Length: 253
Ligand SMILES: *Cc1c(COP(=O)(O)O)cnc(C)c1O
Image 1 (cartoon, rainbow, N blue to C red):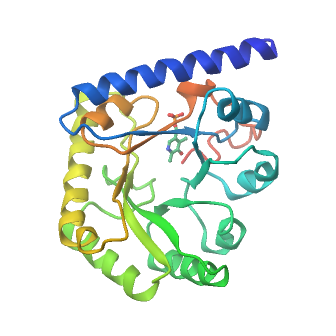
Image 2: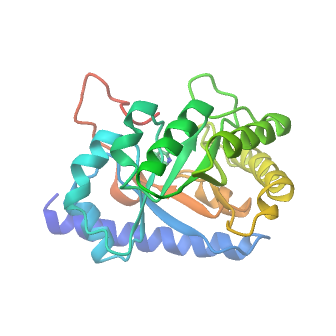
């Protein structure tokens, strides 16, 4: 495809996604505002800047620290929030602590402590979402979907890592492609989120809770179940092409 065609396709895709988000919002019992995050892993800087400048994308998500750091200085980020959505190793927190507005993949106390340490160095707090492994999949990050475990993790983080500000939950549903399965996993995640809000988040007045769920194949279901942020990559930018052929799923988790 020619460059103009590629950009026109992105415009068209974003328009379509926005229309479907609006339809799902109307059909949803929750009537929430929904943030459209453009997931930009493997997407080159020109296409990302086009989505920002021409299509008004105001939230982007990257998976890999190195890729984010390489693209970061070239992105048009005025008024755009940048989220880290992929699994994060503690030793890489220092590279992104001054670049991202939110981390969606908090799932261990050691990671929370390192985010706290780096955030303090930069005199800031870091908004984080606790990742829930809603399908209990061994290959995925996140903590198990157990109420007691979630509350204990929240308490441990707020105690040991006060510069980490937990804003809510993120989940990646098992990639079944099945409408009812998505509804099942997302409504379970919403219940955990409500439980966390009721028992912890509502007791603070400094956080608007955030529930991050839904991807290209599942964002309508996620919105029907009360998602606040949908993370959409391939439906906006087309199928991902991984530069490293040895490792075709690098960063895809
Ligand atoms: C890649 C990715 C997405 C977007 O996936 P698509 O199916 O391309 O929309 C969303 N969330 C996370 C955590 C991802 O890694």
